[in-house]
Image 1 (cartoon, rainbow, N blue to C red):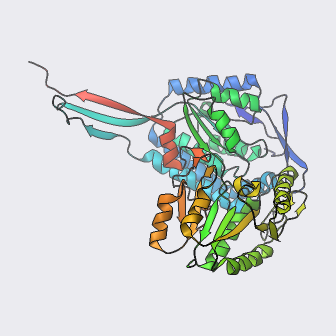
Image 2 (tube, rainbow, N blue to C red; image 1 turned 30 degrees about the vertical axis):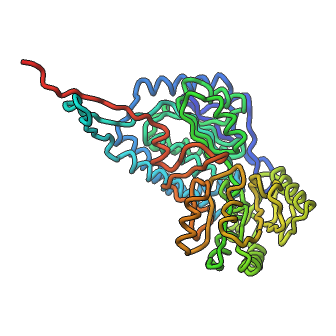
Image 3 (cartoon, rainbow, N blue to C red; image 1 turned 90 degrees about the vertical axis):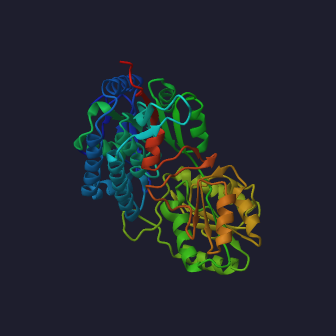
Length: 479
């Protein structure tokens, strides 16, 4: 099927609607394909079908769930080039990063297959109080019901996999709403899901307008809502679902601390990768760096040199390290934030210029804590550098803000590692690594405005399921 015009998948059918959705190449700003926005009648069909399919088959055998996930992993590996080319085209992601994303997505489905096969259930001895001796309990987790998943543009395959794979593994039917900027990758995955044996009545994939998205979140037939995107939108949608399970993976302004004993070569390499990979368009992209005053200038000089050496350009070329932002509008927003900081006294160490949808990898210093570029999520290729003298105060600077996703600390001092672990209000603290690093198996999520709940296949499955207890009274019956 030609990717230039892709139907959406609803109620077991590939359909067109009266609302075409153009898909734009971030590199050129030109429309290269289209799909369709779901209309209310189509969405209702999807809801009716998913609800009915779950009621008819609330628990699919683990072996079948595992085999579907394993088959998807195999097919993603086989079609890695197809997926990578599409990710490059609609997301503007450098091809080496796109191929890495496909590999990770396949690994997520492999993890889901393994989790689906694990023996379920926990035996409980319920004899802790007098009179309870003959009773035994069995605790199992059961799928909560239909899932509504909303995913962003920046990882159009892997973040979809983090919603879809756990849903399949635990037996939740689902509706997936991909970003309207990058819907084609998700729709290509829908073909793979069908080819891998997932029942067509168990899922739907379509972009939708905001009003319809809100109605889906609030609909009582949806039992679980999982969202990855901006904090403002995520918390607004959560308020529409007070009685259902909700998982939010939201924004951040990830920070790094460098102590005097930090390995500077490693830190420079990892900060540059973490700050400018995919043009900084990840929620755990390095945004703030605090280097001890003893090493600040040495580190700054090395990072400036590394940043200037990064290759920007056409994301389809393997040598490209930094591609375009998702749109010229996004690049203009970053430009305005940097300009605002400069007017307020910040200094540009390198970069600071925009060309269409490209924004140069940029380093700033002299940034005040209340500037947007410091206290809000820039979601672009900008890193701020400041120095400190007291480690405890540096930890306070990281905590000073609304976000709490991940943070990195470069040191080998065990006391400071422990202090950072106990002090930083984050979902994860990474030592001698940037906060941009994520293993797909680990529990991933944040605190404060950065999120609610955890992803990572095993942990997402817990979010999508409910524990249910069976108690058996084995007391002998009187003869």
